[in-house]
Amino acid sequence: MLVWLESSSVASWVSLSLWAYPALLTVHIFGLALVVGLYALRDFRLIGFFAGTNASLFEGTNLLSSFGIAINLVSGFLLFSSQATFLISSIPFLVKISCVALGLACSGVIGVRQKNGLNMPRYYPAASLFFWATAIISGRLIAYF
Image: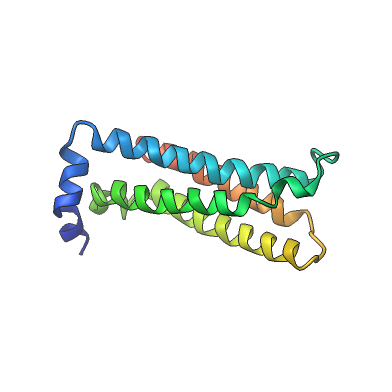
């Protein structure tokens, strides 16, 4: 299946075009900045930084972070399609994808707890920050391993 994906016309366009891969990578980084930037600000505030910041500042960010997630799903799939057979066995890629999934899960739990007014232990936002930072670092390491 991955060989088929990698030989598809879309994957060929991404890997053979002079501009497709760099443009998709730029879009992917933009989506990453939206998602991780917004979640990191929220998580640092929940840990205790920016204590004077009003929580209402973060109320409208769910739509924006969802937009960033959508951008990254599309751009990430297109980038993956051009190197599917390599990436599926790349340890840094597998760590990245696992950390993205765990980061999204943490962010979902945090969002539900906030919405329902439940107590927020500091380990939830700390875990979220850890997973997002690890996803970024391992994403960069894909090129070297």
